[in-house]
Length: 453
Image (cartoon, rainbow, N blue to C red; front, side):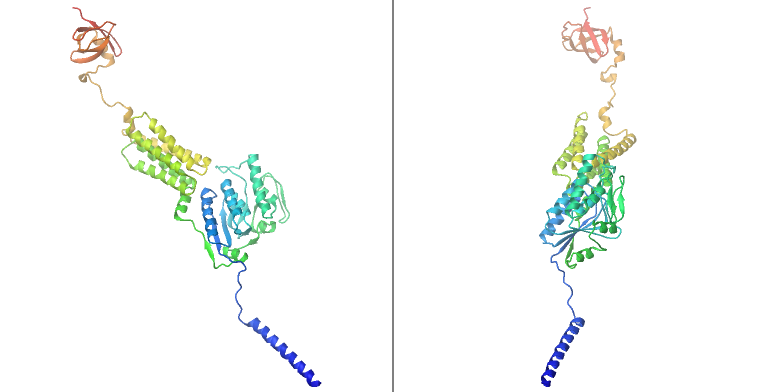
């Protein structure tokens, strides 16, 4: 009996020892690295420029490539001062239509329309020093828009985006409308009328406008439980970078200035070549940049070509400025239609035209003896030797006798002292070869009668 008891104890102790050894081995032994729960590549798209049609085209390409790659996650790296709200709306629609989860990682500013893009993402992450908000609408000059209908529309768009992702819509409306009062007990603040809401990372986290804080895109990807080993970062192409540079308001104004001044100088001071070449090249860069950015179509190129052809013809075909007017109108129409914003291009065009006018005046004064002015100035002198008689000397012809060399019925031509003069009778007809006397002058009009003697 005792033997059986000891046997059971021995087996129990042995089993316990084995379990302890297995546990120790599992604790101290080699372990496999953690595997990401989610499968699929990560597609990173930078949103680090003003929001305009060029960015929309860039993001359309990015989302299309992400879908073709069967990406599991899209990360938008956001640092933008804002831009056009209609383009932000198109980008938001692009995000909503995508079946791929989207995280907005705010690395700098998500201001104005940038905050609207961030709110349309599935998740929002923010880095130190970033912000989200200040989304009130402004015009081309940066002045706040106060139109009640526009403000109400934009406020509702912001509120809808916030509600769709489960965030407090009042805070979103406070970002868009300066006149609202918004309580934010989570951070102990109340937005008063006249203020606008913009949140720091900590404030955004406490109010639910950020889901996490991160110091890098890799941290965001790991937080979403995706592998950081399969990440594709989208970069703009050379033509997209060039288009972004060329469509910058400052560069656009400079191109228009050189284009306008160069073409006009070539018209009024022909023969230089260089101003005309620079002018046309500047216009080509302007239209190229806007086309690559997605603003301009081929119809704007057609207007540009028609304008240049008309202005070139003005150099060689006397049209009293008609061709020049048609060409200028065609160019202006092309420039306006090619731009992403009529108000923005109107401002740039106005500045460029005023500056070009000053440059043209300076060139015209420096080279006043050259150019198109010769078309409007009679440079040949009319002398007596060539048969021309000044108006003030016509009276000296009275009483002189010449010969009609054509029938006078009553107008015709007479020869007087070797000169041919256009004359007229008082109404009677005089055959050719008859002697006639000048009896009266009236300006350029010479009146004669047949000499009877």
